[in-house]
Length: 176
Image 1 (cartoon, helix red, strand yellow):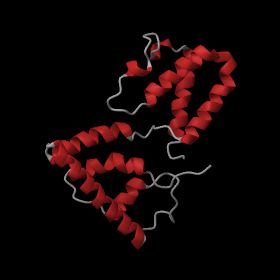
Image 2 (spheres, rainbow, N blue to C red):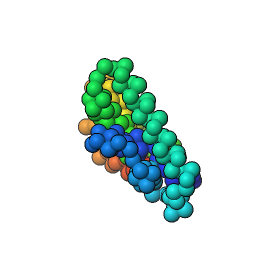
Image 3 (cartoon, rainbow, N blue to C red):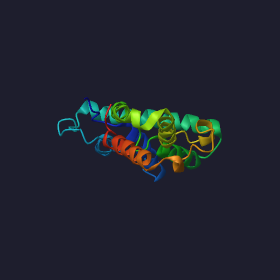
């Protein structure tokens, strides 16, 4: 199994916070500290001149994209940055599913498929999808059209399995 040593998701979540707080630019050391995952080795974290250059260049491009987009919205830079901050906090959460998570969750479902049956599996997956939906404009009614498909409809076993899914996602957050 491969694991990511750097997480852009973490950077996209945290970078607007730094700029919103008035910081003009992150040092390469600060940026690597945000980017590093729990799988990064000391060797991965060595700041070569190339990595320093990438850190500075990425911020330059990021700010340029933000400024150009902000101009088109006709909102102030702090106002626009706050909107981005709110959206990225949800979109780039720590508990976002990875491919590794999907494999482990699928395995758990397959082990229990006969006991659960298709209806419970559908309700379980719809609840999991709602939990994993990071669309800030998301309306749960689009994925859960029937009022009985709610968190409350999960029995104790299914609820425990959903909790297990969440734990799998958390444990594999830096997986591929």
